[in-house]
Image (cartoon, rainbow, N blue to C red; front, side, top):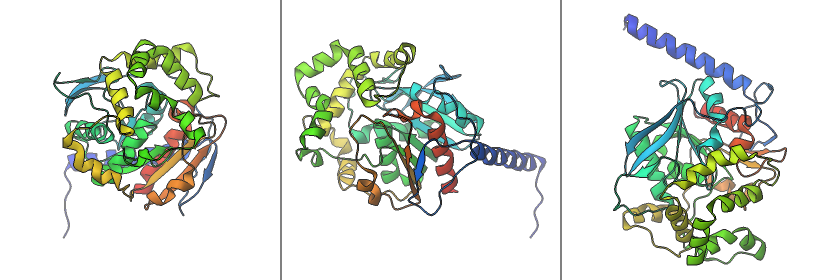
Length: 358
């Protein structure tokens, strides 16, 4: 049976064709830095171009606020509204400026890019003073689901590092229908307080010193009093070869002045090691996460070759991914804040995982 398309439908098809063609060209131009350890049969390698210099961009073109779930969320937005959605998630103690170079790369490739401040950061605030300032992993993930709902984004590539990578893993595991694929720096980061009760070897314990410091009241007071210096120490130790300037640091650490930041950060780390309770509303989700569910979606995990933060070897979490998968080691002195230190490589991973998903 033949059909006749209206001029509006033809225009829509034409726009979709042009956008897809532009994305194909952009995918061929974006280039991953470093080496790729292919662990799937499809290892997308693109034509190399001169990589973007980290720090090329210092601001976002558009910053917005919207009520979503328990929060009024501050977020950056870039790219065409009808492009494939990408949500970029930062970690601690960083903020959306970790993606200040990644976002325009993806926007120019035709993607609709959303970069939210997580709860306790920047201009994101709670709608009610009565809401617990909860930093547990499932609560943070639900924030992003709520944001997608209000923005009418049914499905997106979720990409992040640190807290953001954990959130991407959780969303892919619990809400796979909302994720097209994920990019996760440092791999599979889902955990549970029970699993964290096992003592670590001395070297690993030393790397987690701040979590044990935060478990004490003097640690909470110290973090609040020396917030700026504390963040700089973490940046320096987590990325020992990243020569960031003072302006770059100050842009991000301004986000830590959020009135809920200390409470959220302290609760997050205390909850992880069983020193603080969560909320009963998240018990079912946390029970599912404690079983370490396998992620069946397309996934690219990444690591910088100079990541000073504690992280597992890629082989340790390989069996947590059952879908199309690739691990990439990014060389050249790249540390924990991989999107800001190697924006071209991170953008390439987003483009590639989107192509894996089809």
